[in-house]
Image (cartoon, rainbow, N blue to C red):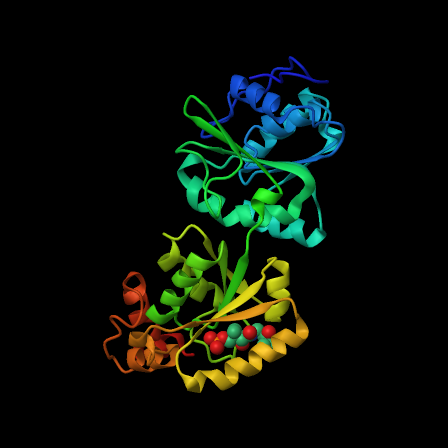
Length: 349
Ligand code: PNS
């Protein structure tokens, strides 16, 4: 592999580490040709960077700053070596960690980029791309481009296929502008202690209306919660794994601040009966005072869920009753174990 054009043209890159699938030279060449004359300064973000070839090619062609994100330490050392070989080390930052976590940090810092590459390993492409795409808009400069590489077919952006997709052998490259990443994001908050079939129904129905739904698991709940927020979030992740436009986060602090950080336009809540209304109305009004542009939207619970609550599930499970049908099948055993009284004694909580 070598750099194709620009200041480091012709430089051979280090041997590709095992398990990394680099973008072939000819694909990289065609991709940069498609991007055109875009490279007079600016910043590039190379996610799932692998050898770093895409970000380095962009630096070589005239961008002046690059951030590489790669979770594997050994692979990061290859990026370092490639930057040394191309004399571009001073223009680059290499960050370790999971892409989703790093994106959160970059968003908080208010960083923006003119070019973002997202080339996830093919086996995780669909779900992972769905979870990160909606967040890239806030990191993209107004005239910036996101480039997504996928192996199974053109990437699906909320609202259908968007952008320009080219196929190179078994590789699909999709180039998207900022407007094509415009997504209406909703936050679906709750304690989810545990998530019920009623919650899941509301989350799924919300995912049909909004481009992306972030399920926000409240962490600052009364201390009597049996399960830490992160574990409650994992249960929800398990039962929403098949929905590409749903992600799950733990929420600390105020809901409105969480929603702002996610770029959300709406809060979605389920409403079961008139008895829910008073407290929901109060919360909606308070949240509206704190963040007037954030709309609260209610989805009416299906009739068969109108009696269902997490507290009822907890009580039934703790007394050894049957919770099948009340919680999603995929987490039935976990809920039985976690919320049974026997476990209460073991945990001493
Ligand atoms: O499932 P729940 O217990 O009704 O969920 C309550 C939750 C998490 C939605 C609510 O407590 C919340 O929004 N917490 C975040 C803190 C906050 O913003 N409080 C002010 C809301 S008026």
